[in-house]
Image 1: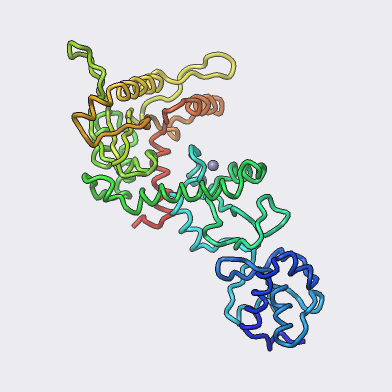
Image 2: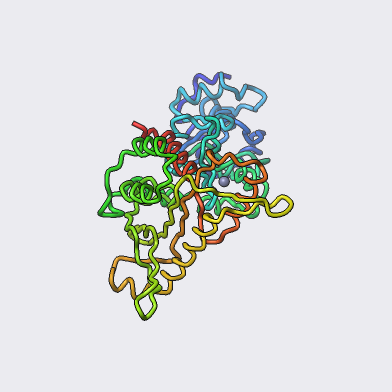
Length: 394
Ligand SMILES: [Zn+2]
């Protein structure tokens, strides 16, 4: 037997037979088991590399090779197939650095699970992983014969928690479910970063590294108006927090709620508007305390300003929903379908909470329905990481 005489055409005939009778019959017929490692990626489908080559021998020299006749490893099978111009994937190999960068960019540098805020580098180590939606390995949770393991459409960006969650419960997180999630997230970020100029006509060209620099210098600034004009001048800095879309900000917006005497109208710090929806924004300086005194046992109370900001934004949200008809009459492009409500407040890094305080803070903010609380350091760390992952940092 010699592998050298096998031609590309012999391999294609072998693939044809495989397609005709199906993987199982093909492998059974010639005595092969499914390949756990090397796969030929051909026209969008993966084929067991060793079996295909062994059967190609039949078309070349009259007799198919049995698996024990030759090695399926790197040196023989793989090199022969690669020399014939076939793409052979090692399903155990990692996704290449270039593909990972592109993938992280497509997912906006965030875990694909909606509502998961894991997106930050911690101690310089990326916290996100690349998961495969389906696998050619029959032992893995979402087995699908023929899938090309490292093909971009089979990859999704997840945090370690959600990665193990989907693997633990494949009946809930099916291939179809994950594919759906994947395309939703990618479509979302396409709007975000690829075509921001169409999203709003008042878009400024903001230098994001410069925005981070100003944040570094002004961390200790407790002037609320300073931060309001900061975000008004640099709406792009809110991109990650506001689902990444390019928003234009209208400061001190009236969101309804006036009495018949024309008093007590609600004015929110900002109404951020995307072409298809609005978001409410309440900004408190980074110097604002997040947590206050101990309550009882292990519970710590949120600080007065934090509760106040949440209450305020709930009022605005309610008022906006209630007055939407009247307001949209005045501004025909304004829409608010369950608008996002975002409170930007405080600085976790500077507040140096102990474990109990941090726990109470996380419990509090994660239990809020419809309001997202993000601290200044989280906002800017996220921005920095996004710039880093996408190579946009100048
Ligand atoms: Zn996650």
